[in-house]
Structures are given as C-alpha cells and as structure tokens.
Image (cartoon, rainbow, N blue to C red; front, side, top):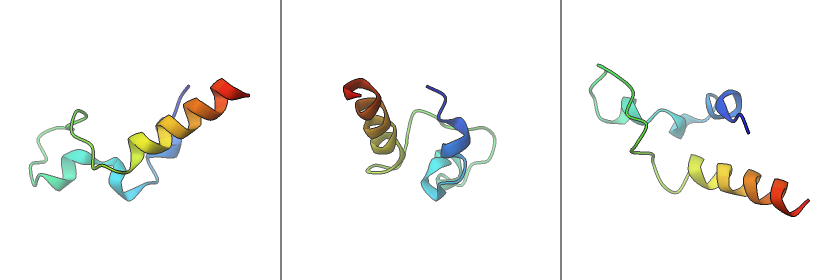
Length: 49
C-alpha cells in the first residue's frame, strides 16, 4: 500500500522538521498520534474488506 502521496499533505507527516535539524529526514520518530494511526486505519480497512 503506497501511502506516500497521502502522507505528504499532512502537517505531522514531516518528522525531521520538528527537530530543528534539516540535515535529513528522520523517519523513525513520527508525531503520535497522527500519521501512523491513519496508516493503521487504512490497512485495517483493506484487511476487513
């Protein structure tokens, strides 16, 4: 499931920008609750349908 396009439009989808360091993207520290919860909802919906 490609969630990249949808994730780019969320304000909390850019974890690297919250640290003040712009040397790279920090994909392992997301702002929770937030984007991972949306991914889980999409995955669960796809699973039960």
